[in-house]
Length: 452
Image (tube, rainbow, N blue to C red; front, side):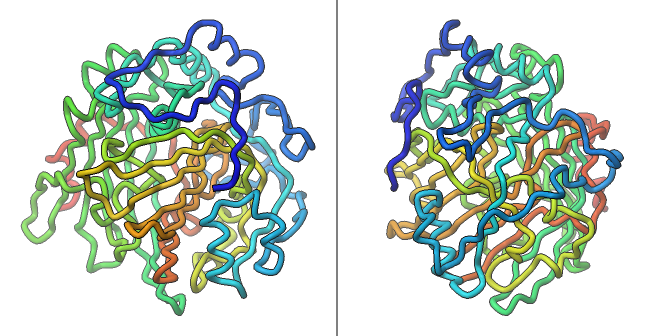
């Protein structure tokens, strides 16, 4: 891997103990000074191509109404330069090995349009305060497979190791409850596809304003997720329910699948790790969803430091309801004309498969946006140590909340030259972050009732 610039407070080490000390008060003061409340460097970079963070988007753009697809707050920004297979070598220091591989795999059609960097990520003030509070109290437990003394904000805004950084991604704020529609496609090499539609419900007790570490530890629940397939007709009646836990050794993830053949919900302990994703045609694993989810216990995690990287950001054009899915989906990769890349600083976290454990991915390298803790890119290696897949999250600020999250996730399989695009919502209703969901909506009985 190319040389990575380390921050003075970042250590390149892997976590191996039962728990790890929180940062001291003096370190935490940086979150109100040289660092943002989320732990990013507030200042811009040396040449000014990455600007200072000044709070991100604090108000929606004129003309936006809650419930609309989000308007582009930067409609007049123009492409600064375009990277193609012909000039990719000039920009290799700003790309991951996986990104470079995409240019080599699709030399005639793949490109990146690079725009001005906009540090648009923002969160509610109570999330910032909770993150500052977490900094001096949050701890990993169970050799990193659980977390304690954390609530609402990211637990480790000044991470000391790779496990802390990946928990920041898992626990980044995305609101309190979300209802969303959308879907995914797995195009063939010719570009033909069948759209698979989903209705999702996500309840996040961890992110509720005023949630306390003590209450969260009593329930041991981070979030509850329910999903049903709405199309095509042959898959309607397939549904999934997941309860994700804070301490995954004390209580592992609980999952149920509704089977329309027997018309009841069944426990599904295999909905984890490298089990195939729903209707994914073998192009993603269960723990690829949301770029990474679930227990981290099969890998050794190393924090490599930070680097500047070109990542999808402020992808409002890709998100627009002015586009149809057919405008986006192309053979080999999505249509690059609709994608906006920007230069941002990212944390680099390497996950290596432990001895005596199994997963189809031997190594994963995650590139995590410093302003939001959203994984932006992941390079994935197979058991032969060869690049296998490249995951890309196309992020934007859902400014009515506000929260930074992906609008589309794409996993490219370099060996089959195919991909899966998850989260297509251009022709669907927009996310509802004001949904009122209850625990009773997330039981196996509710899963069964909803799908009969």
